[in-house]
Length: 387
Image (cartoon, rainbow, N blue to C red):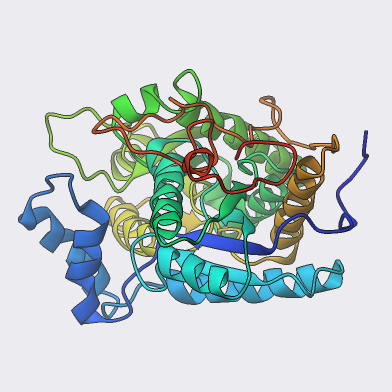
């Protein structure tokens, strides 16, 4: 068994590496078309889209996610170069805005790419945070196959419990606790925050259901424990949610971060630290839902408040991502690499089952699973897996 994935395998078994992200508007005129892309086929009322559009317009109509992806790409490029992978192209594609993933993969195929490894800017398992990315890859691969451009795609495993992700989040949490006034630290409570999803989506997340919440609870416990060791004390914490968008009649994961802040204040808490472990960077859910709305709620009720940083493009996080790239490359070459993790759940899977994070609305083929369209179009897969 290989003991690490620090050194690139020879030869590298993929023609390119692709960062796949959500996408975001670049200006006010893009906001509504972008939101229509995100919600197409879901029956979201126009009034709700207009409400969310105001979040973007509050920041000039431009999502911060695009610049953050560019920063992450530059950091990944530098780390790949340092590992001897300077000749491997690094691509960037989005699900919901330019550069669209299908266009990026088509251009890559024209440049000679026939297999690539995808890195998602989402660390967890659920329909929204994993399968929908895989469905978009599936659509792109089918489209290209129909154009006579076969392409094989793998992905790295979920990295929510990678040691680097946990370590960077833990340091950020400890730093945020120290930002509070000294009098507020004694009775501080921590809210780990992620994007809320419908209960039904959590119930079907992962191979046997419940993995979205299970993964967040696991990483929250690991981050709180590591930050607590740094601070020399235990940190009481809860898992909370933001960005609910469903109808009131549909159960979504709770508590909402604003409700949680009020409960902490009512219970005599001296301060609150918000740690957005569900997000890789400071995109709109973080900038608006936490830095704006949650901060305003805390100010309104007089509760000292601090927000921990996201992992962003920190060197340790980027190094950890490249470790996972090299780990997946070893697997594709038929080796058995070490898979270090934090927390108690162990390493995630690299190839998803047919019903993993099931699409509850319709049947859509998804890449990186045993139902992957690549099998149907006859694209050659790297050794070591069907996805």
